[in-house]
Length: 551
Image (tube, rainbow, N blue to C red):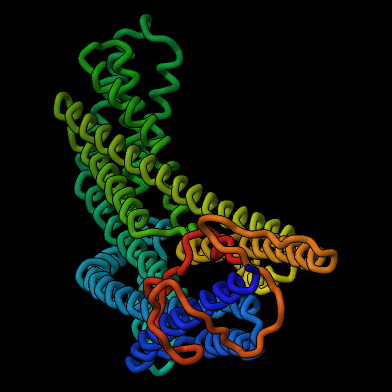
């Protein structure tokens, strides 16, 4: 009763071998198609060596008549064959992704160059007509962004194209370089935008300063007249306020004479606000103006630093975290803040109800800039946190895979646990290095996490196979004991089949009459299959690559 069950088991293994070889040939055909397209996947040579080594193990086991060993190595053979196809397909996909990125960055480069020539260059020439004090604190000129554009066009993008070419095929390095190039291009665009915005701010101040000084002088005279007329009703703090307003107005006039319009604008705004605040203490007519000026002053004090902080945060953001959305938000911050500055400059030439309306416009503009700065700051924090979380998740996956490998190692190294050794070696080979997490892109982190998860899965498979081989050894020992002492071998009734490792084989492939119809084929690599053939698919339904209770 024992011998037919063993023969049936081994016949099933032979059928599995035939089906596995058919699937391998299908995968090899797909790899050949990729190679015919000119691709040279870097891992292919190693993958083929691994496939060949496992195939040799299977073949030698079959030749020796050791079908259980052949069945064990068949898992490794199929895994190596599937991995070879996966690596080849990924190699081709990365090339296509890099081509699309190059095209996108090239189009953006054309846009930025157009902005440079049509907007930034004329703006920079316009800035040279004003003393450096108007613009030197916010921009160093066109040299750096222009140098960046030339470097991208003449050096970096051609270098990346070469790396990504079919002749060179340095696809991973090309992807990393594309990330850096995109960040540099976005930085150059923001630098050009700063030049254009500052010229608009200077012109707004220049166009309004003369009338603004007159209005500030009139406001101060009115406040002084009110103070002189109602001196008994006005406290000493008003005297200090009006004295400071007079000094600010004097400074504003001096700055205007020197054509330092930005400084003149700030001094004039301060002088006029002080004069109006002093007068507003005694008249309800300017109460609205006073309230709005307070809001504008508060916004000016809070929004300016907030805008500068978020822009600085954007400049300092690592390339692996910077996104097109963040770049767009930062541009929106700079644009709305510049509009707010221009709106505040318009206040200088307005009075009475028009002044209130201009103040309201400026307040709304600063609030818009404030909202844009807050939105950008929130987005940057979210992206930084999201990236940090992904790093932590990937690191945790590596740690969990390391622990799983350690458990599997203990079991595989125990007596009769060597059945899990190939899966354990694959797990160790798949385990990423934690140092790879440093400055890794999001896609790279996702890939490392998946690699760690595969390593953990392989470790669990090694543990399961070690347990199975230990259990089989125990059953074999029990069968030997029963034969030695006259025991009655177990007879399996119903579904399933009992496998033993009874006597040796007189030929590599046992034969016996079969109760089911199977197509025949000669040797390892021919004949029919009892499994569905699909590229990379599993031929078993149980977890971890196990084929159930064959042994």
